[in-house]
Length: 241
Image (cartoon, rainbow, N blue to C red; front, side):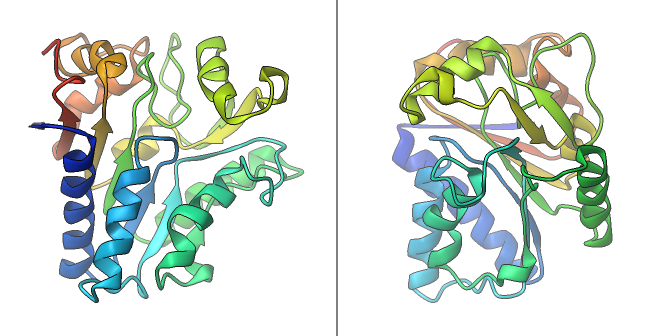
């Protein structure tokens, strides 16, 4: 596990974008795993800037998103489908048929999860997975629990996550209570993982991830077992290390 501490959010975003762009330059048909939320936004802006300078070509990559809200239409402006389109995909030359995001409106949730896993495997697995981290240590929507959920599955979001996500909705009642998420095993099978965290509010989660015991109560702590993890954090997020 490599820990990179930078001065601020902008430097964190640039460092992460350079790592992702380098992955694509070295392997043009890379399979990339993407995350949503506030934290990766700067990274996506930097990737767009790199693309606009003709420094990287995304036309042969495949992408898989960590998660999607359950029972929220993809054209809803709070869906992760919409988020990825607005903040990255429509600004670069990734092929639409190579974009994979769980279908939150599926009729058969077990089939959707199984198909998502199979598509990842058929693509050769994820070369680089980008992660954020929740204040409670969740990665993807894998909430603290008594056990690690292995593969893509339906998640019941906990109260802290619903409250944190309510800032994106008009009211907390509108926040979905379920989501489809890659499981811990799926995430851990990525060849390289880059985790980002910014701000003092993430400091305890980062400490528990890096220094604490490996436990389902802190899902990100399992990353201690991965052979190639880069954690990029600003000074505030690193304050408890």
